[in-house]
Length: 196
Image (tube, rainbow, N blue to C red; front, side, top):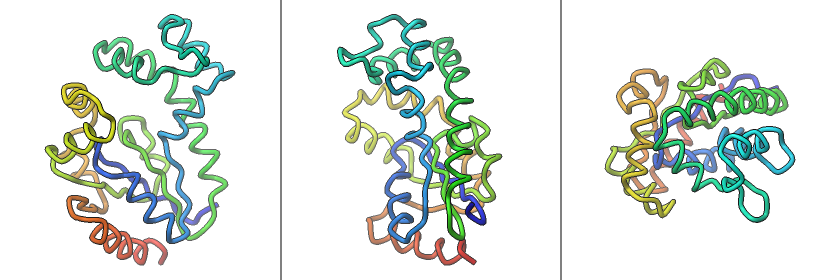
């Protein structure tokens, strides 16, 4: 097990994945909550069956996998649907996270999660790194990356903890509004700090 766990969070489009890859390039293991969210709804998993029963068979692709864009549209337009889905998935995701973190090796490991605080995953970490960009940058990056309607991105942003609250709760902040070289420089500084 790693000596400590660093929680990495930030709003949609802030660049958490880029930060994670920069740490991984230094040999640091990372557990991504978004990856675990995909694992628990793979075909054959009880959660996928429960989702199909609750939302109907149209929530599945012809191949039997979860139709994520359709589900995203539903949950960000219906608060009750979002609450139901979170009650189903968050305990399963947290169990996967604990298991993967327990297997991580090294001076520290990362737990990367957009909903670190909202899901109680902050209780699994020793220190919190917030990846921060202005909200206008979040909107532009997320819209370009996902090809999603900017209004849907705004709804997702509104469902996440506010930027101000995330920054208030951070132990460390990485300003990701610069270029890749700037990101890698900041990761290098944090890596030196975390491995001590």
